[in-house]
Amino acid sequence: MGLQAGRAVSLSVILLFTALAGCTGLASTTPIAEITADRTSINLGESVNFDARSSSTPSPTIIDEYVWNFGDGEQKTTSTGIAFHTFTQAGNHDVEVVVFNDRGESDRASITVFVNSPPTIIIDKPGYVRTNQSATIDASASFDSEGGGIEFIWDLDLGFDRNGDGDPTNDADSTSSSVQVMYANSGNQTGSLTIVDDNGATSTEIWSLMVVSRMFNVVWEEQQVTYEWSGYTEQGESTTHEHIPGQIGSRTNGARIMQVNATLVLDRDLLPIQWPEDNFTLRLNIPMTGWTTSAQTSQDNVTLNATVSIDRGGLNPWPESDYTVSADSSDSLEQSLLNEAGARFGQGEWIWVITADECDPDILIDEVDPDSGNDWTLTIDYTILIPRVSEVTT
Image (tube, one colour):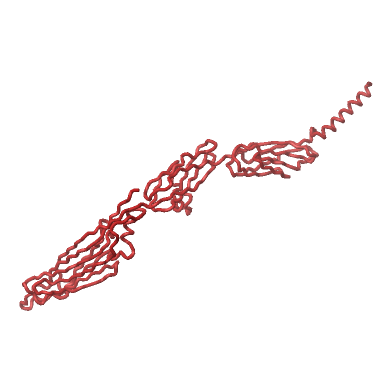
C-alpha cells in the first residue's frame, strides 16, 4: 500500500472511532454526578435533605433528570438536583443519585446515612399493689439496639403536675432504672417512662398499676365517759363549761356518741330544811348538731337537794357489732365510719350553761341573805362507741 493510501485508511479509522464513542457514552459529554446531605446521622423517623446540584455535564449537553434511590426500597425522580426523604427503617442506608443528561448519558454518586433506632423499653411490674404498700417498677432490662448508653425519665403520676408547668405528663420524678411507688388511693394509677439513648433518640411507654383497697375488720367498743364540775354561782349569774365528749386523743371526732345523762345538784347550805329552794336552770347547746335544750331545778321531797336532769338516748344508730369492710387505709376507714351520714349527732363542742335564776334567803336576819348564791355539782355521763379497726391479712 502506498503512503497516500495509508493516510486515507488511518483517517477512516479515526472517524469511525469518534462516531462509535458518541454512541457508547465514552465521549467527553458524559455527566459527572455529585451528592451531599445536610446530615448523615439521624434518628428513626427524621428527614434528610440531599443535594446533587453540583453535578455537571459538558456543553452542549444539559442535565435534565435525577433518579434517587434511598437505600430502603424507596425511589424518586426529580428534574432538579434536590430531594428530601424520611427514613422509617434503622441502619446504614446507601443513598444514590443517577444523573442523566439530554443525550441519555449518565453518572452516579452515593452517600451513606446512618439511621439510629430508638431504645427498647422493657418494664417489669406487679399485677397489682395494695394501698399504702410499696411496689417496684423495674426497667433495667431496657436497652439501645446500637449498644449505646440510655437515660431514664419517670413520671409516676400522669394526673398530677409536680413541676407546676401546666403539663402533668412531663414530670421527671426519677431518673433511676427502677423506682419504688406507693399510692394512698385505690384505682388505676398511670405513669410514663421515657428512655433517651446516646444519639438523642427517645422511646416513651405509658404504664398502669392497679391499686386495690385493703380489708379491715371493724369492732365497735362501748365506753362510759364521765365529766364532773363543781362551782358556786351567784343569783342572776351564769357559769359555762365547754368540752368535746367525742374527742379521743388528738382526734376531735373520735367516737360516736350514743347517750347522755346530765344531773345538776344544788347544795343545801345552812338549814336541814330550806324553803323555798333556790332555782337554777341547766342549758345545753351543741352548735354543730343544732340541738338546744334546758331544764329547771325541782324538789320532789323537801328533805332532798334540788336537782335538774337532761337525759337523751338514741342519739345515733347502733352499728353492726363485728364486720369486714374494704378501705384504702385504717385512718380513712375510721373517718368514714365516724362521719357516716345520719350518725354524726353530737359531734363537736358541747356548751353547758348553769344559771342561778333565784336564790331565796337562807335565814332572814335583818333582811340580809347570808348566801345569795348556791354551790352545785354537775355530773355528765356519756355512752360512746369507738371503732377499733384491724387489717385482715390475705
